[in-house]
Length: 173
Image (cartoon, rainbow, N blue to C red; front, side):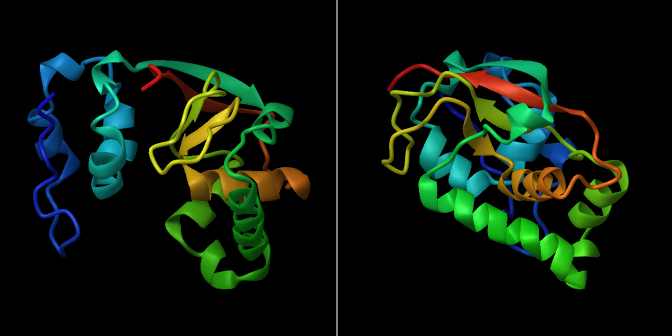
């Protein structure tokens, strides 16, 4: 599958998402626009090196709503959850984190600005980095999950009771 690279990625003037999306292949219409923007375009280098050889034309996406108790069941590698919880603590202790566009949005709106990507049936699959994946495996949205976990732990007053995520089904490779 020939997926176009994001022009200028990693530089000071990367290609806009709208320009990039005009070049997105019709053969990958299984990828919702939001997923292309927040995963492929925003994280091109990782997407290219980790996911392009994973039969992405077979991925299927479904938007679902998760309650807070389901959000805290989203998994990653054991050490990453500790890191995410450290980042979430920073949201409440560090004014600089609170003043980022993401921190501001989430504290004001009680949810994420874009859906995270979760693989609910990934148990038994291997992550491209080599570790085993889990049920409810986080694929994209690490900082959003970190902040959301912190807001849930603290019962933040703006916290919504449910959050939109993308469930992705992927073939075993």
